[in-house]
Length: 376
Image (cartoon, rainbow, N blue to C red):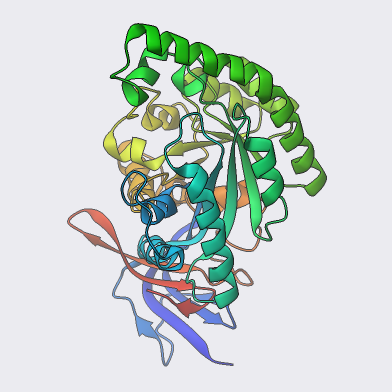
């Protein structure tokens, strides 16, 4: 049995940082040791050794499938491989690729959904991907086509998370209709904008209740975790709890984040929000949620590298112990979706391991092992 021994590291254990070494064999962590240097080890020179990051929600695959608005890359497989490389280089060994099922305004995602599913299925069969890719379906409840598209995807073998979204103007993230207008339709006249938003609201009233009931029923029968997206009001959180959801994904107010945490939901915020110092759409700052004691885990959302940087900022700016800060990108997201075999450096768990070197005060990913195989 071939062993890989990484020594001379600051190893992140559930009890905190310890100087020592880690032994991997047959895709699993075999042992953790003290500060000695066993024969045949690789000396990491005092760098950090942490669990592979677990990413529950990323739109990054979309950037590679459609690098410019409605410009599709000719090879979905090549787009996936480029995405996979960027994910692994960011220290992420488990990634939930978030695929939109429906959208309130056509930005090309309807066509991209088919390409993404095709690429992921081909990549899984070919066995050439370095990270463990799972599927997160983001269901836009107000879209009249959502139900039919969802039915086509119900049997995806890697489906592990479903979120319920409502991006209708006046709801959740777009509670302020003017913010929606600034983001989507700034050039419209007042009359055209009023007519369009009224039509979207009517469409939501017609389709969202039935779509939501269908998705919730499916998740309960298949025991698939659910996330409530952009909770804004306490009522949103209460509804999520009534439907037995597991995650409050990107709550837009501290009020909602606090209600979600108190209700036992995992509260997930965007790491770009943390790195940038605030929300790009004017919602609550992730740091504020962390300082209030309501943050459970981070998501890189649209910038893979932000995940490790965001965790370090929790340590530096919120004053969290490093093991607590890094849990938001390792063990906490894994536990939120029932992945009990990863997220911690413990004997018997998957050997998903990342070497981090501090450069100019920033954490830099130097090496990555996924299931014991070096992939970066």
